[in-house]
Length: 625
Image (tube, rainbow, N blue to C red; front, top):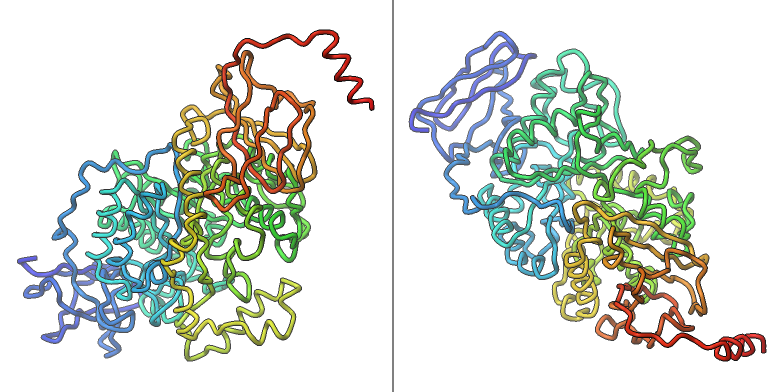
C-alpha cells in the first residue's frame, strides 16, 4: 500500500462516488459500467473512510468493507490481509473420513464472546474428537448482539468478536490442532440497516421473502449482484482460510439462471482453495437433493445438506410431542432405519403439515451427503424457553439416541455445549431492531404460535424479550458444566472415538452398506455390512422397555460365519451415568435393556459342543411348560 489504497465500488444509480477521510475528499473514476474506481495516494493501513454518493453529504460505509471498527453505521477501515503470518501451510483441508461437526456461536461460546477466548477452547474440541467447526455468521450486523443472520456488511467480520486478524488467528489455531472451520453465510437477504439500495436498486427484486427483501440473482442488472456474493464466498476461503461454507436457507435464493448461484459459488470456492479439500454444506427446508449432486450431473456441487427429518423423528421419539412441523413424524424405528439408509425421509411424497409434496428423490446419495443432529441453533430456540434436548427427555433415552446419532452412518453434528448437557438455554436474541422491539417480539410470537402449546397465555407472557441484553447473556455457556456433567462428556468423547476407530462406521472409503430392521415399535437394529463379514458391526437401539430375546428371526442379526456377536459398548455403562450393562450371552436367551444402545462386533468362535438330542428335547419341554 505504499502507493496508496485502491478502491472500486459498484454504484450504477450514481453519477459520482468519492472516498471521504478526515483529511480529504477523493473522487473515483467512472468506468462507464456502473463501477467507480481509483487509487488514492497517501492512505494506508488503518485509514478510516466513508463513501459519498453524488456529493449528497450522506456518508456510507463501503459495501465491501473489510472491517467496521464502530459498527455498520460507522466508517470502514482499510485492512491489509497479507500482513497476517499464517502457520497452516501443511493443512490440506477437512478429510472426508470420520467427520464430526460442531456448531458454535462465537458470542455465546465463551463468557467473553470473542475469537481469542474461543481459541482457548480448541483443545477441548480436539479432545472431544470434533473435526469441523461450523461457525454461525460473523458478518457485521446492526446492534451489540445477535445471531448474525441479519448481516448488513458481508465482508466485514463483526467488531463484536474482535479484529479480522483475531478471526484469522482462530482459524490458524484450529488447523494447528487438526480441526477445520467452515462459516455459515447468508445470501438470501440483508438485515435491518442495510443501505445497498443507495448504491443500486437492482440489488433487490420487488417481493420479499420471510426474512427481508428478496435479492436479485436472475433479473435485470443481476450480474454485479451475483459477483458480489460469489466474491464474498471466495473471500472467506482465500483471506481467512475457511475450509468451506454452510449456505443458509438456499430455498430462498431465487435463481432461474442457466447456472444457479449455489453452483457458481461452489465452483469458485473450490478453484480458490486449490488442492485444499473444502466442505460445503447447505440448508434447504424443501429438501432438494440436487444440491449435493456433482455439477457435471446437473447438481449444485455441495458436499452435504442438513437433514431436518432425522432431527424431527428423534425429537418425537425422545419427547412424544408432535406439534407443528413435527406433525408428520412418529419417532418410529422405521424412520431411523430409513434415515440411516436413505437420508431424507420425505423424497417427494405428500407432507401433511404443508399439504403438499416435499423433497426430491435422494436414494442415490451417500450417507456423507447428510448431516444429522439432535440440536442446532434453530431447533433449540424454536421454543419459549430455549431448552436443550437433554432437558426434554430422560437421560437413558438420550444416551441411546446419542449413540444412534454418532454411530449412525451420516455425519453427526453437535451444538455448542451439547457434549456436556449445558445448563444454559439458547434463545433467539437480536439487538438489530431494539428501537422497534415490539415488532421483533410479535414476529417471534407469530412464528412460535404454530406450536399449539405455545398458545398458552402464561407461556407467551413469560417468553424472554429477544431484544433484551439479558436474553443474550443467559445463553453464554457455563463451562463448569463440563466438569459437573463429566459423564455426558465421556459419553460423547467415547462415541466419537468409536466412530473414528471403526472405519465401517465413520464414513470409510468405500462406504459400508447399511441395512436395518424394526424389532419392535420402539427397537431397531442397524447392520454395517462389509465384504468379509468379520468387520461387520451391529448397532441395537431400544427406546422402549426391556426386550427378552430368545431368538430373532432376522438375517441381519446373524453373525458372520464362524463368529459370534459380542457387546463392545453400551450406553448404560456406569461412567456415562448408566445403571450398568447386565451380562449377556447372545448365543442364549438374553435381555436387551430398555432405553439402551449396544454396539456389537464379531468375535471368532472357539470349539463348541454340539447339543445332543436329549439337550434339545429337554429345552423344548422347558419351553412348553
